[in-house]
Length: 214
Image (cartoon, rainbow, N blue to C red; front, side):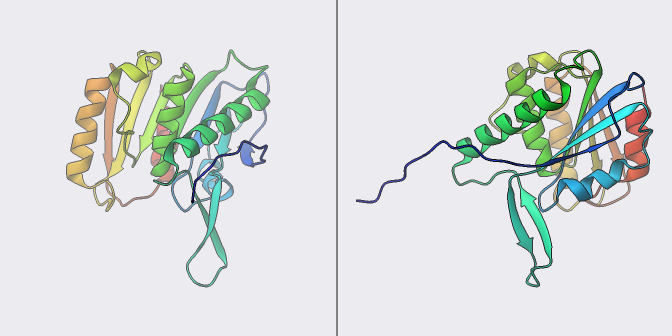
């Protein structure tokens, strides 16, 4: 008889940081990369930000795989439909572990979050689960988790919610973007939709403007 079983064991994952936590640090940014990306490459989007006042933590999705048939480039995924709930639980515990390691002595510094593409769903699940108070929440070209609703985000009642999407995005199409903008406006008190000319990609200049804005 075939039967699927589960087991709990210790595992190790990585993440990347930019800058150092000092007395001059004013903002901590938690960043969640998109599908098929790695934290090391995603961290490059933040290299032109003022790193004297901003400390960046870029989380790494756990499931790595080769991109293409040449086996030279590697990407990663946060979760799949297979064992979906287990993968979410594992990832949430990973984010908690990074937070405890990095920020246990810096709990008074302003925290902001940014998710891109698939990273948006993980970011929003963690914010709902952890009840972490944050200043800005940037949802870049991503979709809210279907299983979560307005009442799951009570800890974000005073947060600034910014949803960003390109007008040529082939994943978050205009119709999907309008639907997401509407849902975010219903869920959150302070939602600002932002559109730009471009595709499914981070625009660094716009990213820096968002990070430096009040």
